[in-house]
Length: 322
Image (cartoon, rainbow, N blue to C red):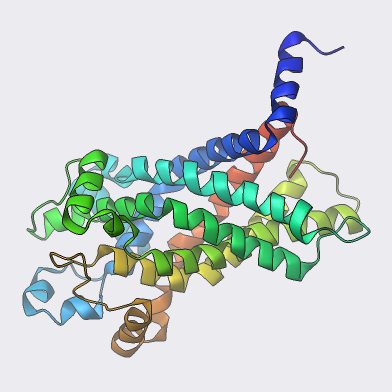
């Protein structure tokens, strides 16, 4: 017999399934984000280093720090800016996942269960999983793009200070206000195109891979729906998401971090295609994978922490497994 507390939880989950799933996914994503955020900061700094468009400016070239790898970049942040700076930009990152993860997870499950539909044996065909993952990621990221813009720009504040440039923001609220005052409400969606492109690719790797691997293991092996299965599926999803998403992430980071004129137009790149062309022409194709190691090292534990947390809190609160 269920206790009154358990009945209340089950009742709420049954009456408000999408709200419940959105809340749970936001909680799980916030935990994963805070645990792995230093790697995200390191990745962002690496993606900006050696930027060809910036180096066309002689003054910028003289101020720029020498290229450093992942470990030296992380150590340099700690030494030059302090340990706490490893979490600079974490607040808008959590805000982003409250919106992004909440929307993408609910959207994917709705597409999988109600729109695209499973096969007769209960499996979800790969092509449907790809379509569902990309659509869910694109929708979620479009709504979360303003918080991602603030996160990326705040992550670069420590580097600006070291280069002798004035700080742009004094906090999350000030960042939002300044972006709106400089470029209007539309300025909050600066770089949304490569942002949405990246999210579609990352979710094709993350959601699609996790869902496909998990249900393949459940249908074709003796593994049960437990932490072992979740860990294997999340490990695969983190690797695929990093391979597919890093090039778009590099483009997104550069477009979001570029200086803008009084009308909010970028001064370095006209579009994501222009940024892509300049990066390949000026730095080579492998420049699109700058920061890949910290991206992968972050996505692997991020996926592991997120999916284990998400599956467990769904089970605790009486919601069916993903």
